[in-house]
Image 1 (cartoon, each protein chain N blue to C red):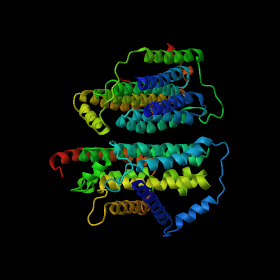
Image 2: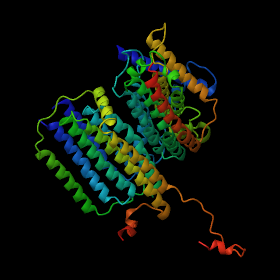
Image 3: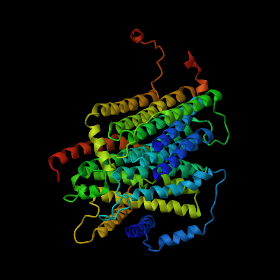
Image 4: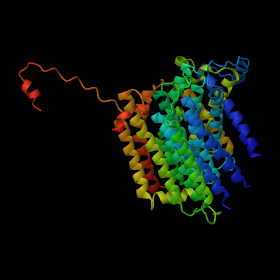
Length: 103
Length: 299
Length: 186
């Protein structure tokens, strides 16, 4: 029975839902990034669960996990770069005040 | 049986490090010193700062102690005398000690005091400086041993200790390890002279004992890592394996504590500049050199 | 109920709970550290699933990453301690709906799909590290290298974006000197 796999996937679903909620509801850039981190973490969890319970012979899955971790790090670096630049020029990273992006 | 031996040697090692630390800072060797300090601290009032973040305030010192203890789990004192022989031991050491940073930030932020908070964030700056210099020398050690397991790493130094095989890596690792355990001259997070104790400033009584204990275990853990990765762990003639481990670990701790006192303190910005502009290129060169050495003279 | 299942449930619930705490607390440092503990619980789940290398890596990486997040929160937020109980949410209904929908959809998929046979035999930790090493420097080398290159690019881009514009001297006032024409030449 695949009960362990299903439990893990449901936990990942919970993290994913929380992340989506956070990324949409927060007004601050850094908090939005936290939501995205949660979404990516849910993806990581799914990947590892699929490797462990479905295809343990395919070590490439772990490789994929490493790449997702890289994406998390890159997202943080670029996100904070944007945050610093915006804070310098506008004095805040509140997204409600970023109306000019609406065009 | 081996659990009892490990716990006993942990207690003994921590005590000796505490004696050494007191010797280094007061210049007087008192064997009963740590006991007296502990009793004095126990008699102190347990002050809870106003408007503190209670959770962080309580958890910080405990997390420091736990992180340091966990990092000791992969240190072998003799063949078979190890808490857990993980296949990723060398990486696990880093993972456990990364939580020292978390503990420092918690303990600094928790009490809602300026000194503590500055100390905690200073340690973050220090970590960004030394982190790469911990990981990259460990990479070369693992390259030679062809394994991340600490037992294999010690076994790989049978012919020649890593301190002679890759002296550059040793120098960088000791430097980074001292910054990781924030012993002087890298003790700015708890700078006694300038920040009134930094992260420690708001802690009194039993909480301070836990914090100090965590720090002693951390120093012990870093010196054990130096011994395991570079000084051949339990290897040595005549004496039994565990004796060699103990002697080496404690003498490294003594040298770190006593030698560090002689050096001037380094400001965070200077440390960052040195580590990133000089340290990381050196560490990369070290990886390159050891890569060639492993291929050409596989001792 | 296997031991593995119990641990998976415990760490999974901890991860989700800390994930929710991230958006419920008012204190920014608490929020960042809650995210850290959520990620650590995920790392622990990797360890439970016998993926030792990735578990330890996740636990190690996230400690530094989230601490850096914490200091950025303190720098950029008006009320990092959360004593002012500021409200920092918008489009509540939409985001709550989207979150619940995402959770329900993913859960339904997990429950309804036919996962087929479950693998029981997996390589042990040391073997996994060895295999992963050969994978990284063998067939997947190009991917791995491009990941490294991506990080380098991101580092440079982020730094370039974040550094303060160089302090150039003010453009000199048009002087009456003989070389006046040259200055306006371009």
